[in-house]
Image (cartoon, rainbow, N blue to C red; front, side, top):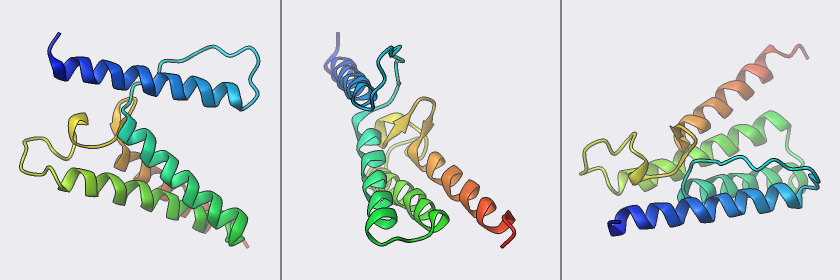
Length: 127
């Protein structure tokens, strides 16, 4: 097995371990382990966004939509910084080797989805 593939396999094993650990930590007794395809960079970006969301919501007491939009922005910025550092390579914006990814998409796609859903929710709710 080439070194690159061995490193990817090890990264997936570690990612799956953390996913299963946090799911068990959340109190699920009869947990069915789901293999989450991703990499540690993407997992770290989601942890960073979760920290920003927790600080904004619990410490600063900001509105939900604003906090979630800032979490989506953190996902986009973190992934784009990671990818822009490797932009000389072909496919740098989409390929999983150049930034964070989870399941089937780069992390910045999830950031756009989070921002869109919360912006629509904020403006669609009648106040």
